[in-house]
Image (cartoon, rainbow, N blue to C red):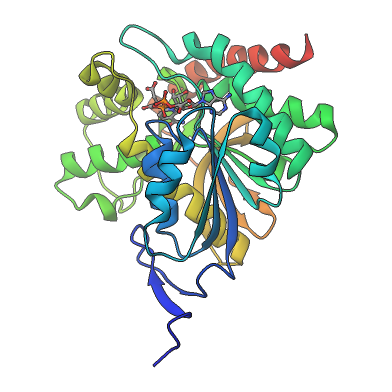
Length: 338
Ligand code: NAD
Ligand code: LMR
């Protein structure tokens, strides 16, 4: 029998197994905004991830309660809570991965860009902390509008002299999770066996599902393509309206963010062929940031894949996406440069 301090833990998201030494091996992960609608279930899922040895939970409210609660789970990760800006540096020091779901969510009738005024400042402050305390950490940015907050983070890091484009990733996994679910529904397949690349950005028409590249290969009618594209692009709004003022997607987002963080950690561990879609500094198009498939490895982003062959419908969608994206990116850059 293995000693009890070295048990095999199973990652419930991926099914992969890992030898856990009860906190002495693995990666150090911080969640900023850990007491929020996304932050709490995300913290729980990360506490269940055998690759996480230390989990830091930071927020400006309520972290003592969330930390006490999650720390009672008998999994390997050691959990510590940090409350308020005076504890931000301690929360960040030594981290390998920083996941940021801090900021306000939408209410019905709002666009993600309507969140810019509040969330841009929050992301700036948190990224200044990252630049100071863990400049080599991988950053997973969830706070909306992602199409602007990722450029904001890049500018903050450039200003601090710490920018590494391989380490900054905007989280668009929820678009892929939704696309896999909705396409599987139409095709009558198991959603876990469907993989739809979603490229562009993370708002309305900038969300571009590549339905011509669905795996397993399938043939969709033009009506199905139009229905699915519209539903995937408006999946966030579907949840915002159903929650009727009580916020936006939190549970599916925590699932998506935990999956994405796990991929980043598996990349850092040296696993081969870890591929996810993400909004990153990119040369795939003429825009400075774009979401496409990236391969994750020991250095963060190891390779950014080109878009591959697009259908005529997707080429038209790409032009619309780029038109909106360029403005959102510029707005983010200008916020720091002004
Ligand atoms: P929420 O209001 O439930 O939680 C946000 C948390 O951030 C709160 O606990 C709040 O105290 C905290 N916070 C605020 N200012 C902070 C600061 N300066 N430092 C640290 N923490 C701070 O919101 P939510 O539903 O968890 O959503 C959070 C963000 O994620 C929103 O901007 C939302 O639009 C975005 N989001 C993105 C995606 C995506 O796919 N990328 C999906 C869903 C939601
Ligand atoms: C989502 O896609 O669910 C998030 O971006 C939240 C939102 O505002 O729609």
